[in-house]
Length: 61
Image 1 (spheres, rainbow, N blue to C red):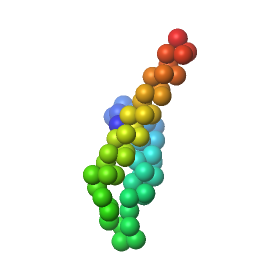
Image 2 (cartoon, rainbow, N blue to C red; image 1 turned 120 degrees about the vertical axis):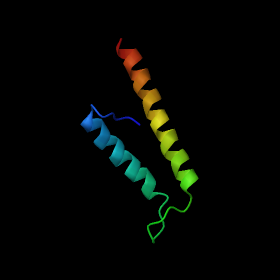
Image 3 (cartoon, rainbow, N blue to C red; image 1 turned 45 degrees about the horizontal axis):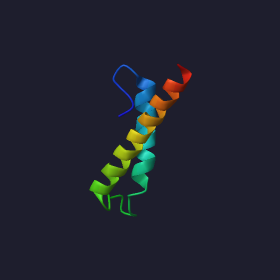
Image 4 (cartoon, rainbow, N blue to C red; image 1 turned 90 degrees about the horizontal axis):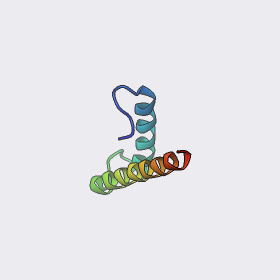
């Protein structure tokens, strides 16, 4: 995940981002309709964010 124990702001950001993504997979009863699909979606989203961050970092150098 994006945040670490030494980065509280990153933890909050990751939690909010993950919560938003998770909402797409919740039904009216509040249960995950497909937990594996939700986990894959969240992991992919995090990976893409990290790749974009690294790309921006290289451009600044």
